Every structure is written in C-alpha cells, then in structure tokens.
Image 1: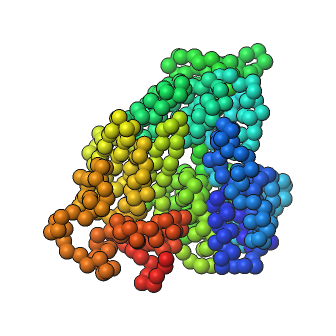
Image 2: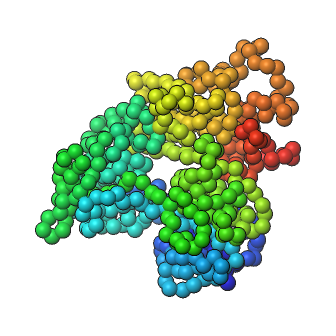
Image 3: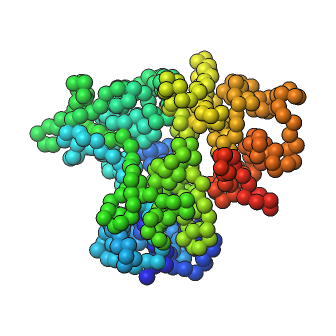
Length: 474
C-alpha cells in the first residue's frame, strides 16, 4: 500500500513531494506518470519546436530528484478510476494500487470543439512532449498550417511554426487575440505584431469543418462564415479543461473541476486535488473555479502535500497570472484583465496608451481594489500590480496615477497632509494602508516567497492581507 499516491507528474506533483518530505521523511510515495518522462517545463515545447531551446533543457526535475526524495515513479501509467470506499486506485496498465492518502494532480485535457472530420491524420493538439514529437516528425512536409485558437498555446505554436518557415493562419472565435487576457485595444498591439511577422489571422469566426483528400489527408478548412482556407495541417489550440475522467462515478464531487476546500481536500477524506484539475477559491471572483496556470498549480500542490502529511495549512486562494511574448509582442496580465469599459458599469477601467513606444497599461478596479491588469511593451510594473491584487489594498489614494508614467513612490507617497498620519512601525497602520506598497515587505513576501505566499499570508474578513504572526518569517 502506498502511504501517499500522487496521480500526475507535473508541477503540482513535484511541489507536493517537496512538501510531504519536509514533514515526513520516510512515508512511501508513489507517483503515477502518464508520460514516460520526468516532470518537465511544458511551456518549453514550443521553443524546442522552433529551435530556440535545446531539448536537454526540457526536464523540470530530473530522475535524481525522485531518487533523493525516495519516490517511486510508475512511468507510462495513468490513473483511470478510484474506489473511495476501498481506498484503491485503478491504473491504466490494469493494476490496482491501495493508498492511504491520494493527490489528484491529473491536469487538464485539450478541448476539441465540434469540427467535422477533425478525427484523422494531420490534426494535432499541443500540450505535451508527445504532441511536440508528433508535429516535429512531419515538420519537413508541412507547408501551410491553420491554428485554431488565438490563446496562449495557439499563439506560441503559431510563432514556432512561422520560425520553421511555415505559412500560418490563426482562426479565433472571439474578436481579438488572447481573448482571455486582452481587450480590443490590447489586441490591436498584438495584431500589429502578427502583421509585421507575416502571419495571417481571422477573428470573429470559427472552423466548422476539415476537408480531406481521397487518402484522408487534410487539404482545407471551412469556416462558419463560409470562407475556405487551404492547408495541410491543423493545430487545435482552443483551450484546456480539467481532466475529470479519472474520478468519474467515484463519488468525488466535481463541477468544472474537482471541488476542493481550503485545505485542497475533496469531499472524500484523505483525497486531495491540486493544479489544473482542481476547482479552488479565486480571491478576485470570490468563488471557486479552475485556475489553469503554473504558479497556482505549484502553490496548490505544496499546500496539499503539507496537509496530506498532517501539517494543517490553509489555501487562501489564487487568481490567473500570465506572461507571454510572441513576434516581439510582450504582455503580462493577472486577474480580470480582459474586462471592457462597457460591462454594466461594474468596474472602473484605467488605461494608458503610448502608440509610438508600443506601451499599453490597463488596470481594472472594483470597490477601490485592483482586480486585474494588463501591461504591454513595458512590463516592469507587473510584479507591483500583482502585489496590489494580493494585498487587496485600497488604491483610491493614488488611483489617478496607477497607470501613468509617475513612479510608484511618487504616486503612493503624496504631499504631506494628503493622507491620514500613520506610524508605519505599527502593524495596525500597515494593515490600514496595505503592506504591498512597502519595498522591504514586498521584496520579502513576493520575491523571496513567490511560490509559497499562502504559507505566510491570510486575509481578514475585510479582505486585507494579514501577516501570519509577529515572528519574523523572512
């Protein structure tokens, strides 16, 4: 019997191993790895395809990590089902594995929209090393590619294939590039980068069918508008959804993802979930939702691992944080960055645009709190904006300068008398004002502990971030 069984072998699994071993040095840990490779950095697979990064850099953790932590890894074995009463996991190789504690870190699965003739050769998704190798094997014969979806994966795949000398057309259902991140104005900056790179794109339309020749090979896609685009390859990159198949009919509660509480435990005692498959608390929306980003997966895995090993720790929530660059375009964003001005007047939208320098800053504010941001071109403020979201501080004192070229010290420390007098040596005053603006505190809490903020931070009933205690935790 495995004391700790971890289904999955990516970032959430790795952080869970680290957390467990920080408390329990001897308990048996077994990892189910669906892929025949150690944990690796998934964003690198587009860079490797483009030839920008050597393949040896792919592993996130090498075999020595598992050996040093006394972890048994079953490569090429996935979780297929769970008997929650008998505490038994059913594996893809036909075996079963009894367990005491189980972490579901089974990730997400690419979503395939209803496209006629999508099944068959020359159509790919792009989220794993296997996907990369499959596309790379055909690279020499590929001439024209249609990428379905202008999200994070779609844009990076398009960039990689263009660098390989292929003719690329992107088709996006929404009316903008990176629709979950950018508003229309932000998309215009991305569109200019695509135009300059010679990449074609169609916005506000969708692929409804794939036309194949007599031998079954892709020759054309058809759009909902009736437009037809000649191609020999299709990459479907419309998004990833939580993988719920392994817990189907198990009694483990699911919605859009596997539902967890603030310890990352499911409704079944001793069974936890973390990473892309989990539906956990979002501090911006104030409700549970899947949050399919790498930093959140790491934090969830670490806290789940601590709790599995008996050291109780609360997950206070997360929010989406993204950074991407392609064809010279660069954007960092977090939270509700894609909100448009006309959304029911629920939010206040602040923007700054410098067309000549290619700079765009956007802040989304609700109830005097920063709820989201996007910075294009000059991304140096991304960390500070992220800190403001985490702290949930009242930004009304300097709201008018939030996106301008005024420096943050100038914005936050106005003329004497403009703010109530505060003694910043007092913990009470720090809570009143919001600790994220203080350089020393910010450096300690966000730079030094960027992946483990929940371990040192909790929020009071008003949404203000409190220190975990009076002892120095730096």
